[in-house]
Every structure is written in C-alpha cells, then in structure tokens.
Image (cartoon, rainbow, N blue to C red; front, side, top):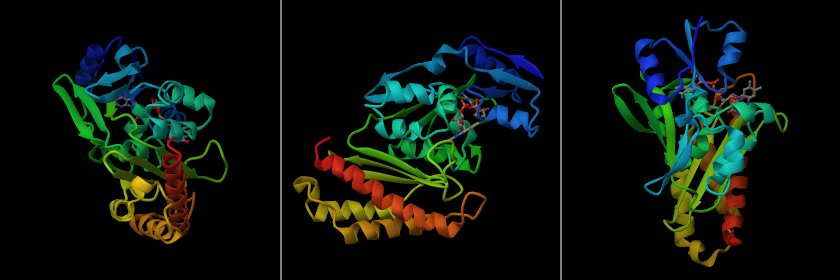
Length: 289
Ligand SMILES: Cc1cc2nc3c(=O)[nH]c(=O)nc-3n(C[C@H](O)[C@H](O)[C@H](O)COP(=O)(O)OP(=O)(O)OC[C@H]3O[C@@H](n4cnc5c(N)ncnc54)[C@H](O)[C@@H]3O)c2cc1C
C-alpha cells in the first residue's frame, strides 16, 4: 500500500487526479475500521490531515464555511453558539477519542444513513463543497448523499468544506440507541426553527436509505404555528398538534429492520423523538433563548 501525505490542498487535488483510486483518510475512524477488518485494501491511502485548508472555518457571504477536517470536538468547542444543532449531534458521536479524530467531512464521505452530522446539515439546507483539479462544485447536501454509503463525489474529487447559515433560532438533535454513548443511531431526528422566516426544518436519520426531510410534517407544523398565531403569542403547541406531527414524521420514515432495531420500532421511535424535539425547541423559543 502506498501512503501519500499532501501538505496543501492543491497537492491533494493533484494526487487525487493522478491516482483516482487513492482512498482519502482524515480521522480514520471509518477508514481504519474497514482496513482492520480486511474489508478494504486500497492501493493508495492519502492522509489529508496535513492540509491546512481542511481544518479552517470562517464566514463567507453571511454563511459559515467549515472545513471538512474540522473535528467533532472542535465543532462542540468552537461552533456551539453558531451551530447548536450540529454541536448537539457531535456530542452524541462515539466517545471523546472518536470525537477528537472524527470529522464532518468523514461523515459526509461515508454517507451512512445513521451519520449523526447529517440531519443538522439537512435541516439548515447545507451545501457540500467538493473540488478537483477541474474546479469546484457546491452541492446541496440532500443531493450529495445518494444512498446508503453512496455520495456524489466523482473519482477525482475531494470534499473541501460544507456551507450553511448560522442558527437563526433554536435547534435540536436527538438519537436513540441502546445506551448513552458509543452507539450508532437506531434512529435520530434533527430540527431547526427559523422564527424570522417562520420556517422550520425536520430531518429523520437512520430510518431510510439516506437521511431525509419530513416535508409534510414540516408543512403541518408551519400551518399550526401560522394559523394559531403561535410565533407571535409564543403559546404552547397543543398536544393534538404534537401528536399529529409525530404521526406525520413516522409516516414519512422508510425504515428497515436490522441488527439495531425493527422497522416497526424505528417508526414508533421517530414519532416520539419528533414530538420531544419539537417541544424542546419550542420551549427554547418561548423562553427567548
Ligand atoms: C468506535 C466508533 C464509534 C463511532 N460512533 C459514531 C457515531 O456515534 N455517530 C456517527 O455518525 N459516526 C460514528 N462513527 C463513525 C465515524 O467516527 C464518523 O463517520 C466520522 O465522522 C468519520 O470521520 P473521519 O474523519 O474519521 O473519517 P475517515 O475515516 O478518515 O473517512 C471516512 C470516509 O470519508 C472519506 N473522506 C474523508 N475525508 C474526505 C475528504 N476530505 N474528501 C473526500 N473523502 C473524504 C474517506 O475516504 C472515507 O470514505 C464511529 C466510529 C467508531 C470507530
């Protein structure tokens, strides 16, 4: 196995163009599992950890642009105010050791339906910035993730960053697993409120071939908040509306039964998560947090 270690972005793209088969590795928390179990034996491994451009984040035209190599630990420490939903999801990833190494870029690279970083990106309408020596493309995350462990990267492309607006209101993320840490989600749910635009985003994780937005449920709650004047009054959302919201989220889920849970359990669980997460976010809004 050949090991390559570019020192900057341009060199990384040149290596990828010359060796399309090169397997990128950043934190290695997915790649090393594949290697250790002998499921994969890439001819070329390209370590991207020396590329400074991947570790940077900043603002660009009113949005945040976060390098693919920013770790979960850094998201929690440096971006928790700007991206509370993603920080919340990051806290649920693995263990401190995994969060110190693992990155959102790696989560996008793996494109697992259970990837914890993904629902917060979906609800904020994030874009994934990919590049090759041929140029740069910005792809909505919903188009970037193509299927279970499939993404839109072409063979000479690498993920540079993801772009999304800073939180415009309360954001929440919750996941279900057999214990509190070191679990791949049985199912998960991300939610973001945007009081100024009177909008919300809801994304279900690990209950379909990719994470996906529950648009009908979003539309229903949008109507409830609008028609009841709840954005203005900041009154509670009624129990029947919460229950209906849960039903619509469960109805949108396309779960399978696997080692982590049955389809039936997942459908039930996303309804519970949906009600819970909306209640938490709405409480935050009511309290003006
Ligand atoms: C013990 C353990 C617990 C875990 N717990 C969780 C969990 O709770 N939630 C969760 O979502 N995940 C979990 N994971 C999976 C993993 O930690 C995450 O998917 C993480 O985000 C991967 O990031 P990484 O930087 O380590 O990626 P890597 O392993 O380095 O790479 C992952 C994939 O992305 C590709 N890649 C990486 N960087 C780039 C780039 N810049 N451009 C193009 N392709 C790239 C790689 O080629 C590979 O296909 C866990 C893993 C382990 C081992």
